[in-house]
Amino acid sequence: MLGCIGVVYGDIGTSPLYALRESLHGAGWDGKDSSEVVGIVSLLLWTLVLIVSIKYVLLIMRADNRGEGGTLSLVALVQQALKRRPGWLIAVGVVGISLFFGDAMITPAMSVLSAVEGMAIVAPSFAPYVVPATLGIIIGLFLFQAQGTERVAILFGPIMVVWFLTMAGLGVIHIGDNTQILAALNPYHALTFLASHKLGSFFILGSVFLAVTGGEALYADMGHFGRTPIRWAWSVLVFPALALSYLGQGAFVLSHPAAASDPFFLMAPKVLLLPLVILATAAAVIASQAVISGAFSMMQQAVQMGLLPRLEIRHTSETQHGQIYMPRVNMILMLSVICLVIAFGSSSKLASAYGIAVSGDMVITSILAFVLFLKAWKWPLMAVIGVIAPILFVELLFLGANMMKLHDGGYVPVAIAATMCVLIWSWVRGTNHVKKKAADSAISLVKLIAMLDKSQPMSVPGTAVFLTQDPNTAPSALLHNLKHNRVLHSQNFIVTVLVANTPTVSDEKKVAIERLSDRFVRVVMTFGYMERPNVPRGLSLARKRGEKFDIMTTSFFLNRRTFRSARNQGLPLWQERIFIGLSKSAADATAFYGLPSNRVVEMGQQMTI
Image 1: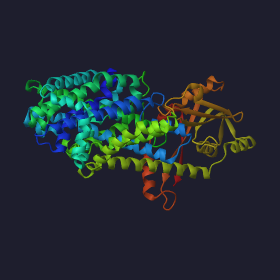
Image 2 (image 1 turned 90 degrees about the vertical axis):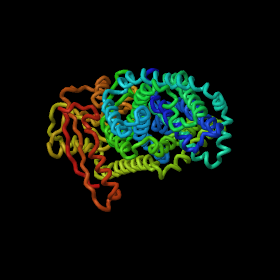
Image 3 (image 1 turned 90 degrees about the horizontal axis):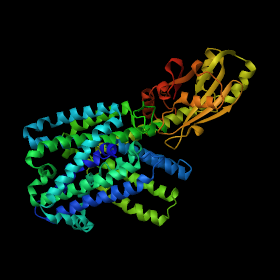
Image 4 (image 1 turned 45 degrees about the vertical axis):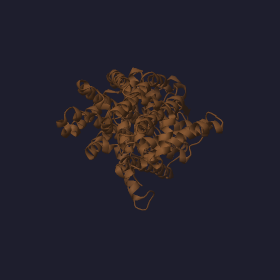
């Protein structure tokens, strides 16, 4: 629970730094009408209750796929319920992970900038150094990711506990400034505020939504810590601290209207302002960790499901399988965050870009949950509508309100998500096109074995393992070896690696073996989408089932394809170039499949697409 407080709740835990400030600014509050402050605080509190407590903690976190969460886990669960993989389902999942990735870029920039800006309150002369200091902190955070989530959590957990207790303490101290703020606990004031401001309240919702940014990380990071610690942490510490902070800020603003410019920092005693800024900066750094960890999980699932090319994945924990580090994803995120900080320069400007990606991702989660509750959990239709419809309606309002900020910077997450969707679409289309093209010239594995029995090529001792995507056709590497080396090993394993819809697969179901002849064995290995596809480990399971071979005299044959673009064939030229670029960036197959590098033979093949 301490670890999940340090990783999962960092993002939503720093929302009080800017949520009330931006909401009051959006409402154009002039310091006179106290009901506006009460209404906004009520909106903040009940948004937390509806979106985080009810939707994520109570409902969505029940929809785990063997302990794993996130958009693609929901997609996998819905796919299992429908017993098919419709195109709309994959499209929804792709949009969801693309939006989350956009959020993972904006959150570190927003959180760290908003905290470092507090130094300008302590020492106005520090203002010119806000951006450089922010960049230094962000670079350090991303470089630290290689240490793994477990070490990060050990370091960040205690700091975030102190942060939440400090927030709660400051809130409790100032609630007495104006006890009228306690009326915000009644949702009637939130509804009254919306009704009285009519269309104007629609624009304010975009700022109110900042209070729940980070809520989606509860579900995305579930595989790192498990459901129970995340739920307990929210109920016992995080939600009470957030509620007390917003109530305290509201009461302080009611008694000191000028403090609306930055209520969180200004309500701290001057002697404690510098320590608070330092603590807030630490908390903001930690806030970035929630979406970074979630982005690693999302990208790993996307790779395992064939939506992206192979990416290097490093497991960083012996106890929690979901704790991983992806160097290339980490580098892309770091460079993107640096560009955002330099381009926007302040948290107020960046606030316009914040929210669209998160609200869009939440809407997609609700849509998938609707199908899951109805088809998999067999809830009555009216019960599903009664539970999901109010949440979805509120989220659509938030999405619409955030879309109004499109021209002020909201185009950034939309552009990031659109780029991600195009890359995934191009990769999936390109992969399917290559499979079809390869199938046109493929030879049936059974026919090849029959031909070899007649021609009897030179036999050499040892075992050869050929990896192929299609277990029914002869691997290209096998054909090239026969053509150029004119030899055949005494034992040949034709291995196909598949990815299941579940995060993990038991050893009993991991390997399916079929002996085709004295010299050929077909092996289909199935790994969970959160597992590393380790081929030698799969072969060791085959040995336990009676297949006799010496793993130390085994050679692994891989087919390395390079692609050339051909006009007016297959994909549009621009999409071919994207696919070829992505294929070149793919991680080395030897490392991806856990093969011993000193026993791998690669056979080159050039394909025109």
